[in-house]
Image (cartoon, rainbow, N blue to C red; front, side, top):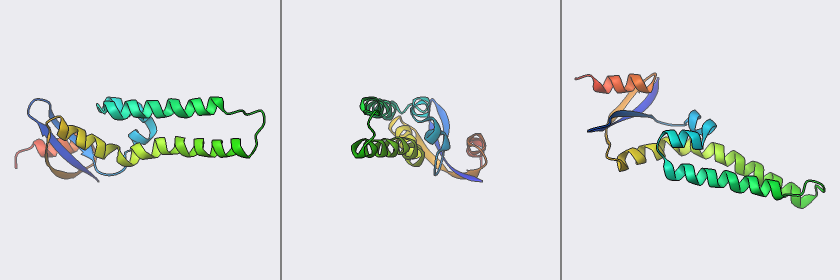
Length: 125
């Protein structure tokens, strides 16, 4: 069972957000962010990917010395961070975004899927 925080909006209905690590955010990054309406985070992540890509392109690979090895070490760390950080923080970003958009938290439930969490909260007590 997974833990979900369930939010309600008067017009847009219910949304469930899993508590903890988000594998979709870690693997899909900006695409996941766009799908969850995290516009600012998505733009930032795309800019960071482009920046790392430009550094990688501008690094001279013909003479791989100490400086180039250090640059590649930083690039690997940067790309790893761009995957790991959304996985660790993505669901928290999503919850803050829902609250900012007018959703209110109804409660926390244990369920197998987000759909099951929503149906648990939708049932009257």
